[in-house]
Amino acid sequence: MIKTLTSWRGIFALCIVCFHFAMHEFDQMTYAGVTFFFMLSGFLSAMHYDKGFNVKRFYKRRLWRIFPLHWLVLAAMIVLDLAMMHKFSYGWDLPLHVALLQSWVPNPDIYFGYSIHSWFLSALLLCIVLTPLLLRFTVKWSLNMIWIVLLLAACVLIALDLTCSSSLLSYTYVWPLARFIDYSMGIALFLTIDRLKWREKMQKISTINSSLIEVVALTVLAIFIAIHAEGGVVTEKLENAPLWWIPVALLIVVATVLNGHEGVVGKLLCLKPLLWLGGISFEIYLLQKFVNNAFCYLVAPLFGHYGIMIYDYSFACTLPLLIVTAWIVHLLMKRLVKK
Image (cartoon, rainbow, N blue to C red):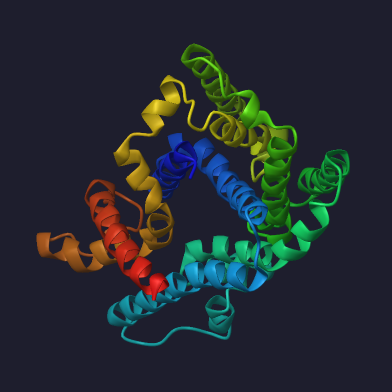
């Protein structure tokens, strides 16, 4: 386990939750965070492949990880909605959400419908399905070939983002094929680190040098955040993923090569509260809307505030409730997976 990457998962998950509560100062960290999660998923898949890969076990572990929790959250959202609306208002697209296929339909009412944040799982599902085939080819390719193919795919996506309409641009944010590029970059990063023996070369690095490298990675991220915050047509067109490839990739590489030899920043990221938060980041991400809705329509009325607007004015109360709920659900899912 690379502890600093686990902590980054928790940090990015909280930033995404804050963004969904209309805290716009977290806009950049949210866009970077979504790219980070897809890239990290590919990175970890390649890491497990390197340690001995069984296709059946891979599918079982990954699909068992995402579908039970997804179905639980989706069912909870439907039950809560029925309790509030007193009628079944779901249409033909519900089966798409059950099967995690909603992100293939270029309609925001569909891919952001029901359990809104499960669009991420819908896009990730394609990556999971294609992983064995992708790894079978890439492990045989040279690094030059891998990065040339990725560069071509990236150029196609960048050209699409720069020339497409605003509605189509919004769709590329959730489009599985676009996110497959992020995922593939994660695989390429691991193969690059592994083949060039970067981790081995850092075995004797000093704490001072490790700290300097970590500061450089954070500085690069800060620069890209500043570029995005400044605005402009190009940055807005590329904010869905391309703008964040470099800083996110650098964070993953630095965390990996310095694993066990962290600097000051890495040691802070290895603190137990952050590691614990990273461990429940998946549940935090998926449960955020349900917990907020439950608070607004079940808890808040007890204090005379029935129907607080979703993601508005309820953050201080919802966040602790979300973290506790995510932790409880994480423990339950962990027991279920073990069985």
